[in-house]
Length: 255
Ligand SMILES: NC(=O)c1ccc[n+]([C@@H]2O[C@H](COP(=O)([O-])OP(=O)(O)OC[C@H]3O[C@@H](n4cnc5c(N)ncnc54)[C@H](O)[C@@H]3O)[C@@H](O)[C@H]2O)c1
Image 1 (cartoon, helix red, strand yellow):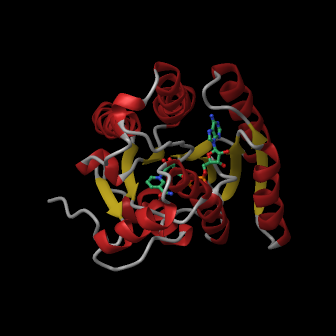
Image 2: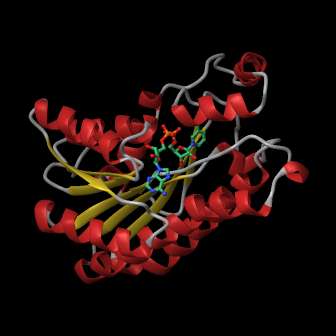
């Protein structure tokens, strides 16, 4: 993909399944990668693997729900790797529970990670992008945001909010040369999906149901996602903003 060589990229949740695969792919494209994760050890493992392969990466232990932590991480990333050209808001969390069985404390955690954290990241990074009149943001939502998903009401509400936020910021910042797009994974084999299946009480049955619902007949792999994410981040998407792309084996087909 064009235009990623030498660019500084921040990936939140970079120590996780989709985030780790995305960090590695950006490094392969020659980008300098800030691997941001609440789990500092997971971030360090991804950054070390990139460095061992000859790439440039920095691990940042950061909780995106805490604005002071976000500001400190951004300052460290820019001091070491230079101004941020690309932000990938990928950190997320989910739990399977029918809505009436959920508790407000659970909503607060879901909202803090899946929407407030993304707000902090946008709010921290955008002023620099506006000043430089350049930037690309890729937000990782979910097919749950597009068509709903039983057992994920609050998560789906947050991801739907992330889609609406992305379209609004795409409009506000197009004139500043900043593009904002969204990638929606479907069921993808990561720690998050494993926890979600366990929460449903019958993991094998749930996985089989998802597999049957996916026209391509398989659960996604983390490596299925970076292609779409890098496209939106790259100069090949220079005339693309405010768009939502599902990477889910055809699970949803939205016109
Ligand atoms: N796996 C799926 O089936 C699936 C489906 C649809 C959407 N998604 C979305 O894809 C994204 C990546 O998820 P994944 O499946 O790779 O999960 P994952 O659990 O492998 O990775 C998520 C990462 O986010 C980090 N994280 C969580 N809260 C954080 C916080 N407050 N601050 C900083 N880091 C934090 C975790 O430590 C973890 O490393 C998420 O936004 C998720 O909602 C995943």
